[in-house]
Structure formats: structure tokens, C-alpha cells
Amino acid sequence: MAVETKQELNPKTTHFEFSGPVGAFVLTFGLPLLVNVLCVCCTKEGCSLAPSHIIAQWKKTPFLTAEVYKVYLLWLAALALADLIVPGQIVDGTELRNGQRLKYKFNGTRVIAILGALLLSRGVATNWQLPELQFIYTNLTQLANASIVTSFAISTYLYISSFFGNKLLALGGNSHNVFYDFFMGRELNPRIGKLDLKLFLEMRPGLLLWVLIDLAMVHHQWLTYGRVSASIVLVTLFQGYYVIEGTFYEAGLVSMIDTTLDGLGFMLVFGDISLVPFTYSLQTRFLADNFVELSWLQIALITGVYLLGIAVFRLSNNEKNKFKQGKTNPGEYTYIETKTGSKLLTSGWWGMARHINYTGDWISSWAYSLPCGFNLVPYYYVVYFGVLLVHRESRDEAKCAAKYGETWTEYKRRVPYKFFPYLL
Image 1 (cartoon, helix red, strand yellow):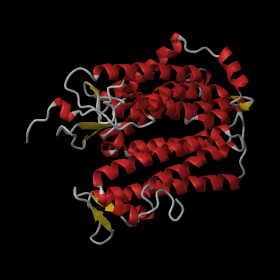
Image 2: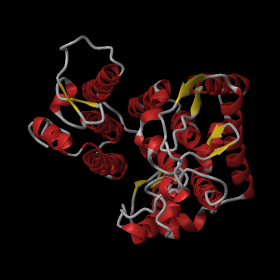
Image 3: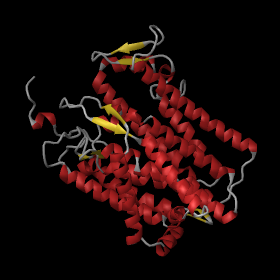
Image 4: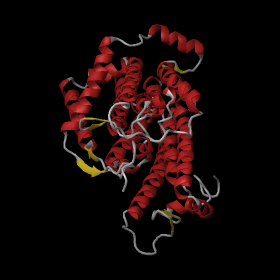
């Protein structure tokens, strides 16, 4: 096999997403503003997006002090160290365009166990005053701003470093336009020593901080009212389970689009360490200062919605993984075999809709916001997550159409629905 030249291995990007460089520029500066606004909008008086309320909060909230930024950087450094020294499962990645197959270490469940043990020990030592959680509640907006500043710093480093050495670039992040490539990410799998930056940022700082923010809000409500509401307990349990379950199955990331196709740029960095922890926790921030009571019937119905979504998401993914690994009985499923040898499921969960796992994910997202009652701002997550999944579906469809050609057209004929059987 002839050795490919650098230009052949890293061709120029000609197809743009997010409306090209203009869209990338708007999102790069618009999304951080959204995170900041959602952080300051929720107070003891409720959640309001009125400009007068937002401006008033900005005036009395410091942007970022040295103390808060130091704490945030220590958080990142501690997690990076844990990622390197805590033992974990070694998994081979998928083969890349250059024939390389990277190795990944997954130790998320052990890192969570260590973090949980530290939190419990601090609770006992401080008579459950937990100043660390109080610090998060008091300085939440500053911590969000710290994550935004860090997102720009990391993304700048990644963009500049991608020009040095023989780097494998992402097919979608090599347009030669600064704004677009900065946003999408040029290098496919950047690493510092043994630390894989893409998987570390996706699975550690943001997701674990999301859980800590939820716990900080529960703790604040307990300190304020002397008890906690069923509503905030439900949301915290639901979101905590989502993070822990995702960590338990994190080895599956090696074959996902984020890992195999997307570069690591501002889009993923900011989404991982800023957007996720500080906007996905919006519901518990609202409930911390707005005590919402739920009846047993409401608790049961909301829990039912969550369990339905989780069941659809997990059962469909397990079915797909089982099929890919060849652990099914002959004739158990119907499928279409592509020219590349891949098999597309056309029965079971995947015979109902082409992205049935996304449907389950979105259904469960409603259970995060329903405990907040009728205030509309906490329903941001449902709307945002829906838009995110629809966009991801469109990317999946485009990539599969390019990869499988006529076979994908036949697959769409056999499985005509995207998300909901007989509806959509």
C-alpha cells in the first residue's frame, strides 16, 4: 500500500456545518453569553430572562476573581492527575485513516468512587456543612465564567498545536478558515503525553461538576429550609444516574462520531466543560431557592417518564451493541448488509425508528424539568436537548448516506421513521 501524502491524508474541508464560518463565529461568542445569562437569571425570586433582571444581576456579580479561577484550575488538574494514575480498563480504539489504532484507558467508575469517598469524608469532618459545596453555590456564575475562559484557552492551544508535527486532522475541521477550524477543531485525537484530551474533557470535568452543582443546590436547600424537597431530590437522582450510567458504559465512546470523526475544537471543549455542567444543572439551581412540593402521584408520573426514556435508550443501545458484537442468535434479527460489510438492523428497536436511542434520551430529559412546575426557564434543557439531537441526527444521516450510498436509501425505505414510530 502506497504511503499517503500529508495532503491526501488531511484533505481540505469543503463541506461546512453550522452555516459555515459566520455560524461558527456567532456560536463561539453567542454560546458563552447564553451560559452566563442562564447562570445569573435564577434567583430567590424565580428564573427570569427579562433584560432588566439580567443586567441587575451582572452589576452585582463579579466576573471572575483570582481565587475562584485558582479553585477551578485545581479541579481540572486534580481530575487530569486522577485520569493518569488511577488504574482502568484498556480498550483499543477503531482504526483511523492513517491505519493507527489508539489505546484508551477508562477509569471513570473508580474516579467517581474516589470523589464520592472524599465528599463523604468531608461531610463527616465538617458536620455536613461542606464548605466546598457552599463555595459552588455562592460562586456559581464565576465558576461558569472560569470554564468559559478556560474553554477559549484550551481551544487556542489546540488550534495552534495542530499546525506542528505530523498530526491527523479531522475531515470536517481543515477548511483553512480560522474561525471555522477553531470552532470545529483541526486535530482529530490530540493528546498530552498519555492524557487523551478529547475523552478526558468529555467524561470528567464537566459531567462530574454537573453532579457536584446538583449536590451543592440540594445542600443549600437543606441549609436554608432545614429539609429538602422531593422535586430537587428527583432531579438530582435522575441526573446523577445519567452521569454514572454514562461513565459505566464509557468504553463505548471509542466508536462514537465525537471520537472517530470530529476534531477537538471550541465546539466540543466548551460544550464539555461549560455548557453541560452550568446549563444542564439549571433545574436544581431553580429548585434550590424555590421550594416546589410534589404529590405522590406527581412523583410517580415523573419517575415513570424518566424510566420510560432510560429503558428505550439503554435497551436500544444494548441491542445494537449485542448485534455488532455477534452475540445474537441466527435469524433473531433482520438486517441489510452494506458493500463495506457493515450490517444495518431493520428489526427490534431499530426497526421502529432509525434513531430510537435519541428518542429515549429526549423522553427522559422531560423528567429533569417537570419537577420545576410551570416556570418556563428550567425547560431550556428539553428544548436545547431536542435541538441537539435533531442536529446530531441530521449529521448521522448525511454521514451514513455518504458511506453506504444506495444501501442507506433502501434502509430508509425499510425503516422510514427517524424518532417516533408512525409519527416522525
